[in-house]
Amino acid sequence: MLFNPPSPLEVKVLTVRFGLPNSASIDTFLANDGYKAFEKSLDMTQEQIIQEVKDSNLRGRGGAGFPTGMKWGFVPRQSPKPKYIVVNSDESEPGTCKDRVLIENDPHMLIEGCLIAAQAVGSKTGYIYIRGEYRYLIDVMDKAIGEAYARGYLGKNILGRGVDFDLYTHTGAGAYECGEESALLESLEGNRGQPRIRPPFPAVAGLYACPTVLNNVETFAAVPSILLMGGKAWADLGVAKAGGTKLTCLTGHFNRTGVYELPLGFPVEKMINEVGGGVRGGLKMKAFIPGGSSCPVLTGDEAWPLTMDYDSMAKAGTMLGSGGVVLMDENTDMVKAALRIMHFYQHESCGWCIPCREGTTWLKKLLTRLDRGMGTEKDIDLVGDVSKNMMGRTFCPLGDAAALPTESIVRKFRHEFEAKIAKTQISMAGVASPFVVV
Amino acid sequence: MTFSPELEAKLTKLVNSYPAGRLKSALIPMLMFTQDEVGSITPELVKEIANRLKITPVQVDEVVTYYSMLHKKPMGKYHIQVCTNISCLLWDGDKLYEHARHKLGLGHKEVSADGQFSLEEVECMGACSWAPAIQVNYDFHHHVTPEKLDEIIDSLRKLH
Ligand SMILES: Cc1cc2nc3c(=O)[nH]c(=O)nc-3n(C[C@H](O)[C@H](O)[C@H](O)COP(=O)(O)O)c2cc1C
Ligand code: FES
Image (cartoon, rainbow over all chains, first blue to last red; front, top):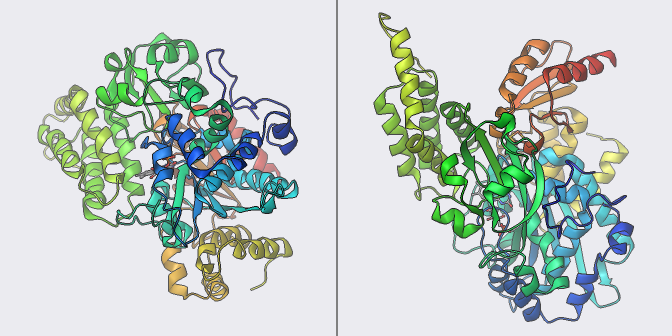
């Protein structure tokens, strides 16, 4: 099923089979280059597979953008312990809805990516951790896995080549924090989703303290096309240090919201005006989030000249993130937006470390007060201060994810916070006690 | 406790998905699948799962209290979840939630007296490009207007 009509500006590499009849079935997959990359990998050495992935300049699509080939290279392949493949399909970063589209339209591409990763590190078992809300995708995935077993692409002695690999789905139960890799592993082991101290990183000690390749759905899904095209050709689809294409979710005030596959380095202006059909209602863009609500927020003016890649976004003081673009038009209430974003992080903070648990709670209280016009100038400063003090001081990056958008919104849109205070001061003149307890 | 044969088959497959000695890994999926049939995580269910996975009831309980989709009290037969997170907010998800509250006469996590409906304001559910979005149990509905929400609820009411 297609979720939105494609755009002629898309470069279809991961989404080539989308829209074909029964695109999720193994027959459609096999008739359209499916499992060819895996067969190719059977004739390659582990070093060769990892080298192709390195050459592709593929960077993790879950948000952090870590080079995938390098990560696979960290796995101690000589270790006598079993190695695991874990797919992060927790997809909970607000603004992000691409992994869902990938699995629904082409689940075998993900299976093939897992098979190749398993070849690269010598793994015999993989798990696909799917967020609880995506229950129907468990059925889609289980069906595809069943087909792959039936056709000999999973299980024992795959394609008669002496390779074994088992793949299972595993459901989450509602927790953003379980998208964080170490919390995900805790959850997969049947525990509360609380993060682990690192190092050691999952590549060395992940699931059951064994070496683990943990990547986002889109990262694994990109691997078959890398082997088929060759790493260098795949890299050339994108820009320097960021190869390939990215599934980009246009959300918020676009005329044509949707998920589109765009090459890395795609101009923001072209993305908004031509892919997304411009800002809804012909209005001006007030704010722009490049990849999920954890990114620092840009003003419209800052965003227009940029390109959608890691370096361009880093230079502008933000991140490419997960691909969840959020566009806010000139009528958006930025105080309310900041509060809603913090409401999320406060709710999802796992409570394990104090700066995150207390920080998000206090920020939510302050922002609630400011949104109701009951705050003071000092509260605005305090929001900035608390945010800055959380950054880099929490056990896992959820604290940063809460602080970064908040700090940028109060800094760049301070006048909106001040305007809310001024408005109530006028209407509350003469009222004895303007305090609100929240 | 006895479950339906379909659920038992699912649970058997589940516990065989993990390496020897790693049975506890099945805990969260087992809670989710059994909750769907039982209706909520009852004390009896906690004991049953603890037995099956050879862990203590407290180890089950500490996990239940962590995850937002695991409920100790039954939700309505139709659990209406309205997303008001940022991408949905920008398409009036907050107003949609208000509309749902009035239509159902329920607040956040409340269940109707007849047990048919419950309401929850939820976080991003991965439907951001087709906002505002709701889920009725596990079914997604995209680009939901107040009128469309009324239709969905009315058609569910008619089933009874
Ligand atoms: C709070 C938090 C939530 C995260 N949620 C997700 C998620 O839903 N999906 C995802 O792929 N990565 C998520 N990540 C990133 C993962 O920790 C990890 O970096 C990623 O899955 C690695 O895969 P990649 O290199 O292919 O991106 C999250 C990180 C944090 C700190
Ligand atoms: S923000 Fe509502 S589904 Fe993502």
